[in-house]
Length: 216
Image (cartoon, rainbow, N blue to C red; front, top):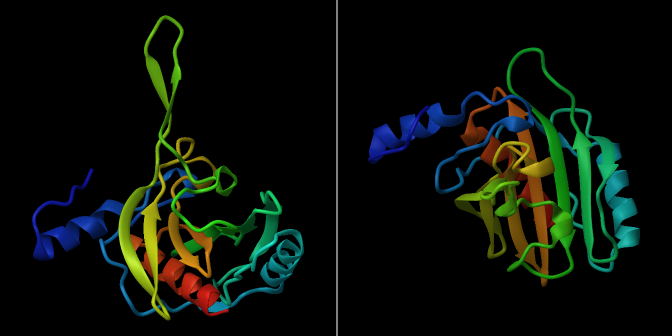
């Protein structure tokens, strides 16, 4: 297991070592403390299925839906709607798998009517929780995401970049990189999970998607 200690090249090498191999929703992403700037290659226009899911959500909630215009190369198949209208939308997408090389294979996009502070439970962001055990003691049932950086989305908007713990403690977002921001009094998120992809690239993709949504 890698750890980040010290500064300079040592810290950067350790950060890359920590999470350059992720597979399934069981891995937990680590990343530099500030989000890197240039968007990565491999982003395409959001597929038709993504746009259609956003349009349906927009009819169900009472605040603007912010749909990413940019998407990591893949199917963007609308897999399930976890929304809790009229106050929350949370759209789940399967993006296909790659036999070789890096691939963003699972994504969620969402928003809540109220600005962050607090996250609405319907957004499925993990929280610290324990359950009692028979005979005494407790069992850790959930772990809150770790803050790993911030990002500028343009027009003065700032976002938080988080790393979810592995499944099952991270729930449906287990192992994901999340970008969360407030805009026009509402809270929004982009959540991605990749296999075989360095953490820094996952952050770049998620931030690029969030920027495209914020500009929407």
